[in-house]
Length: 354
Length: 273
Image 1 (spheres, helix red, strand yellow):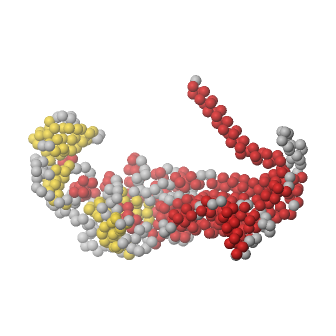
Image 2 (image 1 turned 90 degrees about the vertical axis):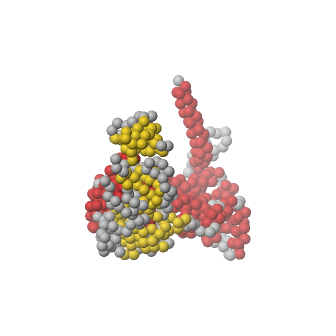
Image 3 (image 1 turned 90 degrees about the horizontal axis):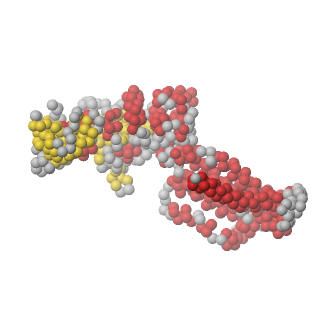
């Protein structure tokens, strides 16, 4: 059984506390940015609770990096307000904002040692020398880089450079941590480990965090909530589970996970303006169902992705256990589907009983 | 084995090329060095008739030649310093800001190198007479500056451009103001390029003869302008001694900067994508 839920509005305000009395850790209200005659960020609203980690997820060119740069202060919005912990910072330069950023290419200064890189923000802030030493040692310990304190950035591995960049951000004790695709330059195995480390540190320190990524697995696995962006707007902000279970728009449904799009549940003509989205795991191979023919089988390890042609439509199904072979005649049953009218989810996910 | 034959052939070819290049570069230098210490060395003889230090004594005893050395050692550093003060901000602007006419200015800097130098200097001399700059220190410095502008603008501009923006942004994000970012990130990373430009400018000023002769002679003689009269009025050996002296600063400078520029720091800077 699925729990009915109303379709989420395009930009869900915060959240967890219905009273709404808490001051958000970050509030973007109606920010817009035009660059080179193109609207990159279009009247965007987002509230992030203190200590929350929110991912901006979307295809390249959707405006997620621009949004992050607007938060960091490298760009100033044409319209709208940026607030951190209730204080407006809309027109401040990056050096006066309480945020710290981890850059995609790490942006470590090659002519300084790791210690000097990490100490730089404190030196600029005129922290007393003894305290700088202490805090740098502490944060290097936290990210596990104490043994590379005196190395140059070029002499340590990509993963270590990434952690040094994180240390340089954390040492400032920022109110807001900004991560710009911090894992995209790491190899797949390392990426999974480092993202868990980042999440662990973020939760322990309770820093409000914005992560920009195009990798949905990364966004879904370590965020409290995910904001899916498209063409400068936020399509939906939800918890990872909700995002997958009830995508508010057809775009989100197509972007998150894999899915089948059909006109009607019986694969007939259907109604005008209505489309159904069916997750492959909700397509069951069942002798009682609609007759179909297996056209392709793609093994993925513990499950197989099976393409089945049913009444002239190609359906994808995830089959665990023994998969049918191409050419087999099978029955197909849809157990759960999402209904979209003109691109937006118009009712609760439909569960089709046996 | 064909591969071994090819290897051997390749080695012979490489060795041949090395000898050829060494001959072209070192040949004249050896010839100069021999002459500087030779009593007499004429064509059919493979070796000089005798060895002597007399020619060195002649050079150092001649007050004019000594004054020329002093002049040169004054004009070259002053030129580099002024050139840096004028051109480095321009180089930064060319690299970081886009303004109307940027390309025209940048290419226009080559104009001074596009014309025959002598024609340019004659035209300048006309102006200099009007401004009473002939035979003045300022006049010579201006002539020297013109020869360094291209080096001091183009090379540092490229060096500034090669500093990734994100490194500067990271410093801004860490709380540093624009001047601090320039001082602690941009300038140190562009320094190897700026040093190359300084060395090139120093050598350009050090070797500048035509313009200096036209504007400065006879009151201000530098080593290169003195070379002209040496070649005409003294035995070959004195010119050889002077030429050797003239090459010392270049060699010393190149050796000094080579260590720093090839020291890997530049390469490290470029590893950052």
